[in-house]
Image 1 (cartoon, one colour):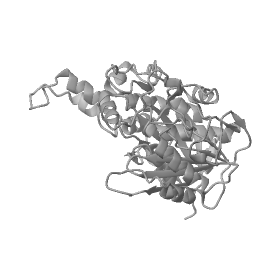
Image 2: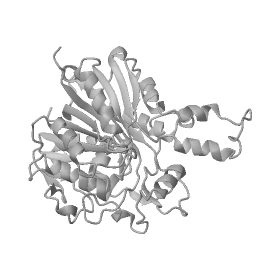
Image 3: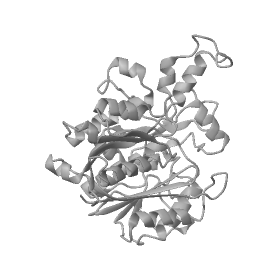
Image 4: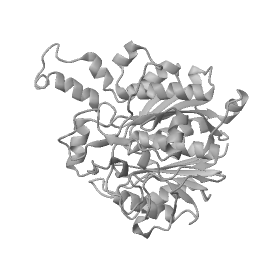
Length: 406
């Protein structure tokens, strides 16, 4: 059977620098910083007290008060992003039997878990009838966002959740791409969501020396590929996309941001502790598989401002793309949003193809490791026909997607 062409017709974003694609995009072009002092919990005793939060989020335009009480923060983000994507795509009808939902997430319910534990810290030591909250239990389900979106959309084809750490966003969209390409669905609502800014997660990451301690200068804490890069700053948010068979998109007169042409993933499998392959060799291989001997006009890199990860990725990219290929990272604006990170990258890359504008890397001045790559430090305007998007997840999962002009 001939492979079907797959296009992105709708984009919905809930991010630390703006709600909706237009606000998100304008924030990237202005190098707006979404990183600041944590407000979601009292972090004064933590070594890292900063994060890229979605501040002043109001779910009222997207769901009822009852739904807001029933859904976790992550599910509210995902539903809001879906509604924005649906509106953006101009979608008024979908075939339930031919519509799938695939969302990526990894740490979206720790806030609910903490809430349940803090209601009765001793109550979980042994069973006491009436202590457990059935609704709280449902809110912690990892597949909650995907199921809520499927119910809202009326999708009945295939509904699942992808969890591959920071690569979850790319992997979810990649799997959605395969379903439409193989004619298993005409449309897939896909993307990613994560809400990792919680006490439990911060306690673990701070103990592992994973997070930045530049608490007094949060706007400078994330510097992808720059010689000053140090460690991660966590973020949160959601991006949802409407992927369609190109024939159906054209038939309904939909606008297409970009076409997905390739998706590849590969596990480093270096050692039992899931440590990074610092040579970048496995990362290079997955990028090559996504490129399929084609050269991108632009690279939207993972680059979370972690020294080891940034250098490994730069080495991998440098071995595959032309020296004059502009490379950017958006982490300086939105932080390292775990699963949401890949979705933000796809949203940015698709809009780069659509507008011909490449957003700059916030806080990048001097490249580390004498990297030969062309890092974008100011907004760049040029025709972009192909964009390579690269991602890496804890556990050694490397993923890459190629977007092209529709």
